Length: 254
Ligand SMILES: Nc1ncnc2c1ncn2[C@@H]1O[C@H](COP(=O)(O)OP(=O)(O)OP(=O)(O)O)[C@@H](O)[C@H]1O
Image (cartoon, rainbow, N blue to C red):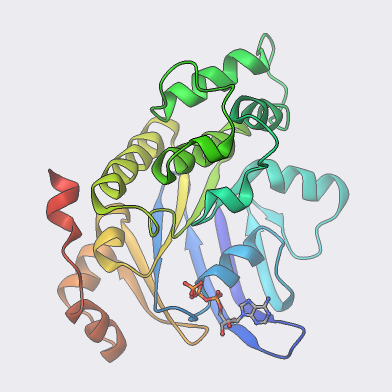
């Protein structure tokens, strides 16, 4: 579903934020991308949706080239891959009700006979666990955890095959974090989505991902199946990250 090969991203100020990254996510799989702040995780995510200045390398989403995509190819990509960020307030239009926001996204999905946008928006808001009757409310009337559900509903509305989640629970309380993580796992199972799950938090990634890539200073230093990598990390950087692992696991499991 996603193949990134030797990706180099350089910002206009000359900063090389991603320097030779390669990774793959198969259909229905979850790859975790971990690393400290500034290691280039978000830049990699932005490059995959065509929002970062790629200097060299290749990115293919479901076989479609991302780099330089315009017109119909860009439109197809916007439908196939969706990106959800840490702060949904910044990405949701404050002047639109959440019903309008999700309905608009439903309109970007491939046409489906008999699908009524308003009913589909209601269904999606229910699917992410929001109570009935919230469609007429505005973003500022929701808590952080609820807004992240709205952002997920909007992303799912276009029926993507690949979802990139960038620090989506980092701003949430630990108990809410656990609920949102479980929601994402359930949605992924039910919808068969491929996930690129980005976080600096290794305990979250262990819970979410079947394989993991560890990023440092723009490069992948180690990758492999989650269990094997956590049990026997080879790179000193991975070992240091794992030594500092927090204790979310119990909260998630409860
Ligand atoms: N628009 C930009 N222009 C110039 N440099 C940038 C830009 N965005 C990010 N950078 C730099 O690129 C590097 C990688 O940043 P990036 O946000 O991709 O890392 P990250 O691992 O996602 O970190 P964080 O979790 O803090 O977002 C950093 O040094 C950052 O300062």
